[in-house]
Length: 248
Ligand code: GLP
Image (cartoon, rainbow, N blue to C red):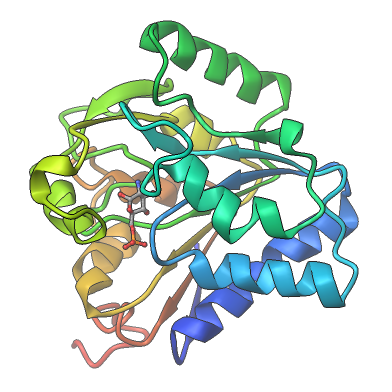
Protein backbone atom coordinates (compact mmCIF):
# COMPACT_ATOMS: atom_id res chain seq x y z
CA UNK A 1 0.00 0.00 0.00
CA UNK A 2 1.19 3.47 -0.81
CA UNK A 3 -0.01 6.06 1.69
CA UNK A 4 -0.19 9.74 0.74
CA UNK A 5 -0.95 12.15 3.56
CA UNK A 6 -2.03 15.63 2.50
CA UNK A 7 -3.01 18.61 4.56
CA UNK A 8 -6.70 18.96 3.80
CA UNK A 9 -9.80 17.70 2.02
CA UNK A 10 -9.16 19.81 -1.07
CA UNK A 11 -5.71 18.30 -1.52
CA UNK A 12 -7.21 14.80 -1.28
CA UNK A 13 -9.47 15.62 -4.22
CA UNK A 14 -6.63 17.11 -6.26
CA UNK A 15 -4.29 14.15 -5.69
CA UNK A 16 -6.96 11.57 -6.53
CA UNK A 17 -8.00 13.46 -9.66
CA UNK A 18 -4.38 13.64 -10.82
CA UNK A 19 -4.06 9.87 -10.55
CA UNK A 20 -7.30 9.25 -12.43
CA UNK A 21 -6.41 11.84 -15.07
CA UNK A 22 -3.01 10.23 -15.63
CA UNK A 23 -4.73 6.92 -16.38
CA UNK A 24 -7.13 8.59 -18.83
CA UNK A 25 -4.30 10.43 -20.61
CA UNK A 26 -2.27 7.25 -21.04
CA UNK A 27 -5.30 5.17 -22.02
CA UNK A 28 -8.14 7.21 -23.58
CA UNK A 29 -10.46 4.17 -23.50
CA UNK A 30 -9.83 3.63 -19.80
CA UNK A 31 -12.42 1.97 -17.59
CA UNK A 32 -12.90 4.02 -14.42
CA UNK A 33 -14.42 2.37 -11.37
CA UNK A 34 -16.23 5.18 -9.57
CA UNK A 35 -17.59 5.81 -6.10
CA UNK A 36 -20.09 8.11 -4.44
CA UNK A 37 -20.34 9.71 -1.00
CA UNK A 38 -19.20 13.16 0.10
CA UNK A 39 -15.49 12.38 -0.11
CA UNK A 40 -15.15 12.07 -3.92
CA UNK A 41 -16.97 15.34 -4.66
CA UNK A 42 -13.67 17.28 -4.75
CA UNK A 43 -12.10 14.64 -6.98
CA UNK A 44 -14.91 14.97 -9.51
CA UNK A 45 -14.79 18.77 -9.36
CA UNK A 46 -11.11 18.66 -10.25
CA UNK A 47 -11.71 16.21 -13.11
CA UNK A 48 -14.41 18.57 -14.43
CA UNK A 49 -11.93 21.46 -14.25
CA UNK A 50 -9.26 19.43 -16.05
CA UNK A 51 -11.75 18.54 -18.78
CA UNK A 52 -12.69 22.21 -19.28
CA UNK A 53 -9.25 23.75 -18.92
CA UNK A 54 -6.67 21.08 -19.67
CA UNK A 55 -8.26 19.03 -22.44
CA UNK A 56 -8.78 15.96 -20.31
CA UNK A 57 -10.83 13.91 -22.77
CA UNK A 58 -13.60 11.60 -21.56
CA UNK A 59 -15.07 10.87 -24.99
CA UNK A 60 -13.86 7.25 -25.04
CA UNK A 61 -13.82 6.65 -21.29
CA UNK A 62 -16.15 4.06 -19.76
CA UNK A 63 -17.24 4.27 -16.14
CA UNK A 64 -18.62 1.60 -13.84
CA UNK A 65 -20.00 2.71 -10.50
CA UNK A 66 -19.78 0.60 -7.40
CA UNK A 67 -23.29 0.70 -6.06
CA UNK A 68 -26.85 2.00 -6.01
CA UNK A 69 -29.67 2.11 -3.49
CA UNK A 70 -32.45 -0.41 -4.13
CA UNK A 71 -35.74 1.39 -4.67
CA UNK A 72 -34.39 4.73 -5.90
CA UNK A 73 -34.53 5.59 -9.56
CA UNK A 74 -31.92 7.72 -11.27
CA UNK A 75 -33.95 10.91 -10.95
CA UNK A 76 -34.07 10.68 -7.14
CA UNK A 77 -31.66 13.30 -5.73
CA UNK A 78 -30.15 10.75 -3.33
CA UNK A 79 -29.65 8.04 -5.93
CA UNK A 80 -26.07 7.40 -6.93
CA UNK A 81 -26.96 7.79 -10.62
CA UNK A 82 -28.21 11.31 -9.87
CA UNK A 83 -25.07 12.04 -7.86
CA UNK A 84 -22.83 10.96 -10.73
CA UNK A 85 -24.76 12.98 -13.32
CA UNK A 86 -24.61 16.05 -11.10
CA UNK A 87 -20.96 15.89 -10.09
CA UNK A 88 -19.31 14.40 -13.17
CA UNK A 89 -21.21 12.98 -16.13
CA UNK A 90 -23.22 16.11 -17.00
CA UNK A 91 -20.11 18.26 -16.78
CA UNK A 92 -17.57 16.38 -18.90
CA UNK A 93 -17.57 15.15 -22.50
CA UNK A 94 -18.43 11.56 -21.61
CA UNK A 95 -20.87 9.54 -23.73
CA UNK A 96 -23.76 8.74 -21.37
CA UNK A 97 -24.03 5.27 -22.97
CA UNK A 98 -20.60 4.57 -21.50
CA UNK A 99 -21.61 5.26 -17.90
CA UNK A 100 -22.85 2.35 -15.82
CA UNK A 101 -24.53 2.43 -12.41
CA UNK A 102 -26.53 -0.56 -11.09
CA UNK A 103 -30.27 -0.20 -11.66
CA UNK A 104 -31.85 0.35 -8.26
CA UNK A 105 -35.33 -0.18 -9.68
CA UNK A 106 -34.69 -3.52 -11.30
CA UNK A 107 -37.44 -6.11 -10.92
CA UNK A 108 -34.91 -8.91 -11.01
CA UNK A 109 -32.04 -7.98 -8.71
CA UNK A 110 -30.32 -11.31 -9.15
CA UNK A 111 -30.18 -10.87 -12.90
CA UNK A 112 -29.08 -7.26 -12.56
CA UNK A 113 -26.17 -8.37 -10.35
CA UNK A 114 -25.15 -11.15 -12.74
CA UNK A 115 -25.28 -8.77 -15.72
CA UNK A 116 -23.20 -6.21 -13.85
CA UNK A 117 -20.51 -8.82 -13.19
CA UNK A 118 -20.60 -9.83 -16.86
CA UNK A 119 -20.17 -6.18 -17.81
CA UNK A 120 -17.18 -5.78 -15.50
CA UNK A 121 -15.61 -8.95 -16.84
CA UNK A 122 -16.20 -7.93 -20.46
CA UNK A 123 -14.42 -4.64 -19.73
CA UNK A 124 -11.49 -6.48 -18.17
CA UNK A 125 -12.37 -4.71 -14.88
CA UNK A 126 -11.40 -1.15 -13.99
CA UNK A 127 -8.06 0.36 -14.94
CA UNK A 128 -8.39 2.43 -11.81
CA UNK A 129 -10.96 2.00 -9.04
CA UNK A 130 -11.80 4.98 -6.84
CA UNK A 131 -13.05 4.09 -3.36
CA UNK A 132 -14.36 5.97 -0.37
CA UNK A 133 -14.69 4.23 2.97
CA UNK A 134 -17.67 3.97 5.30
CA UNK A 135 -17.43 4.74 9.01
CA UNK A 136 -17.61 0.97 9.60
CA UNK A 137 -14.94 0.18 7.01
CA UNK A 138 -17.26 -0.68 4.14
CA UNK A 139 -16.15 -0.25 0.53
CA UNK A 140 -18.85 0.19 -2.08
CA UNK A 141 -21.66 -1.23 0.03
CA UNK A 142 -19.68 -4.29 1.15
CA UNK A 143 -20.67 -4.08 4.79
CA UNK A 144 -18.94 -5.88 7.69
CA UNK A 145 -19.91 -9.55 7.54
CA UNK A 146 -18.75 -13.06 8.38
CA UNK A 147 -17.26 -13.58 4.94
CA UNK A 148 -16.32 -11.58 1.87
CA UNK A 149 -18.79 -11.75 -1.04
CA UNK A 150 -16.95 -11.83 -4.38
CA UNK A 151 -19.86 -11.14 -6.74
CA UNK A 152 -22.10 -8.14 -7.23
CA UNK A 153 -24.97 -8.64 -4.79
CA UNK A 154 -27.85 -7.11 -2.90
CA UNK A 155 -26.81 -6.08 0.59
CA UNK A 156 -28.77 -5.11 3.66
CA UNK A 157 -27.30 -1.77 4.62
CA UNK A 158 -25.75 -1.74 8.11
CA UNK A 159 -27.44 0.32 10.84
CA UNK A 160 -24.24 2.36 11.30
CA UNK A 161 -24.27 3.20 7.57
CA UNK A 162 -27.94 4.19 7.75
CA UNK A 163 -27.05 6.47 10.67
CA UNK A 164 -24.20 7.99 8.70
CA UNK A 165 -26.08 8.42 5.41
CA UNK A 166 -29.20 9.73 7.12
CA UNK A 167 -27.78 13.27 6.88
CA UNK A 168 -28.53 13.22 3.17
CA UNK A 169 -32.23 12.33 3.60
CA UNK A 170 -35.00 14.21 5.36
CA UNK A 171 -35.69 11.40 7.82
CA UNK A 172 -33.97 8.17 8.84
CA UNK A 173 -36.97 6.22 7.54
CA UNK A 174 -36.31 7.47 4.03
CA UNK A 175 -32.83 5.92 3.88
CA UNK A 176 -33.12 2.79 1.71
CA UNK A 177 -32.43 -0.44 3.60
CA UNK A 178 -30.91 -2.34 0.67
CA UNK A 179 -28.37 -1.62 -2.03
CA UNK A 180 -26.78 -3.35 -4.98
CA UNK A 181 -23.01 -3.37 -4.70
CA UNK A 182 -20.10 -4.64 -6.71
CA UNK A 183 -18.48 -7.38 -4.65
CA UNK A 184 -14.93 -7.80 -3.45
CA UNK A 185 -13.82 -9.57 -6.61
CA UNK A 186 -15.04 -6.71 -8.81
CA UNK A 187 -13.05 -4.29 -6.67
CA UNK A 188 -9.87 -6.35 -6.31
CA UNK A 189 -9.72 -7.14 -10.03
CA UNK A 190 -9.09 -3.47 -10.75
CA UNK A 191 -5.58 -2.81 -12.04
CA UNK A 192 -5.09 -0.01 -9.56
CA UNK A 193 -7.09 1.14 -6.53
CA UNK A 194 -7.23 4.60 -4.96
CA UNK A 195 -8.98 4.97 -1.63
CA UNK A 196 -9.68 8.45 -0.34
CA UNK A 197 -10.67 9.50 3.18
CA UNK A 198 -10.97 12.71 5.13
CA UNK A 199 -11.65 13.76 8.69
CA UNK A 200 -11.25 12.35 12.20
CA UNK A 201 -14.35 10.15 11.79
CA UNK A 202 -12.39 7.94 9.38
CA UNK A 203 -9.24 7.63 11.55
CA UNK A 204 -10.10 4.31 13.26
CA UNK A 205 -11.16 2.56 10.07
CA UNK A 206 -8.15 3.86 8.19
CA UNK A 207 -5.84 2.49 10.86
CA UNK A 208 -7.62 -0.87 10.70
CA UNK A 209 -7.51 -0.84 6.89
CA UNK A 210 -3.76 -0.24 6.78
CA UNK A 211 -2.54 -2.10 9.84
CA UNK A 212 -5.26 -4.38 11.17
CA UNK A 213 -5.92 -8.01 10.32
CA UNK A 214 -7.54 -8.79 6.98
CA UNK A 215 -11.09 -9.63 7.98
CA UNK A 216 -14.58 -9.34 6.46
CA UNK A 217 -15.55 -7.49 9.64
CA UNK A 218 -13.41 -4.63 8.30
CA UNK A 219 -14.07 -4.94 4.55
CA UNK A 220 -11.47 -2.37 3.45
CA UNK A 221 -8.72 -4.46 5.09
CA UNK A 222 -8.87 -6.79 2.06
CA UNK A 223 -7.10 -4.04 0.14
CA UNK A 224 -3.88 -5.11 1.89
CA UNK A 225 -3.89 -8.07 -0.52
CA UNK A 226 -4.00 -5.97 -3.70
CA UNK A 227 -0.65 -5.14 -5.33
CA UNK A 228 -1.40 -1.53 -6.30
CA UNK A 229 -3.37 0.42 -3.71
CA UNK A 230 -2.87 4.10 -2.97
CA UNK A 231 -4.58 5.63 0.03
CA UNK A 232 -4.88 9.40 -0.08
CA UNK A 233 -6.10 10.98 3.13
CA UNK A 234 -5.79 14.16 5.14
CA UNK A 235 -3.91 14.43 8.42
CA UNK A 236 -7.02 13.89 10.52
CA UNK A 237 -7.96 10.68 8.76
CA UNK A 238 -4.38 9.41 9.05
CA UNK A 239 -4.02 10.60 12.66
CA UNK A 240 -4.04 7.05 14.08
CA UNK A 241 -1.62 5.63 11.52
CA UNK A 242 1.76 5.82 13.29
CA UNK A 243 3.74 7.11 10.28
CA UNK A 244 1.62 10.23 10.14
CA UNK A 245 -0.24 10.61 13.41
CA UNK A 246 0.92 11.27 16.95
CA UNK A 247 -0.19 7.80 18.01
CA UNK A 248 2.72 5.86 19.56
C1 GLP B 1 -21.66 5.33 1.02
C2 GLP B 1 -21.12 4.62 -0.22
C3 GLP B 1 -19.65 4.32 -0.12
C4 GLP B 1 -18.89 5.52 0.41
C5 GLP B 1 -19.39 5.83 1.79
C6 GLP B 1 -18.63 6.94 2.47
O1 GLP B 1 -22.19 4.49 1.98
N1 GLP B 1 -21.81 3.42 -0.50
O2 GLP B 1 -19.16 3.94 -1.39
O3 GLP B 1 -17.51 5.23 0.44
O4 GLP B 1 -20.75 6.19 1.66
O5 GLP B 1 -19.21 8.17 2.24
P1 GLP B 1 -18.60 9.57 2.63
O6 GLP B 1 -17.54 9.85 1.61
O7 GLP B 1 -19.75 10.51 2.51
O8 GLP B 1 -18.04 9.47 4.00
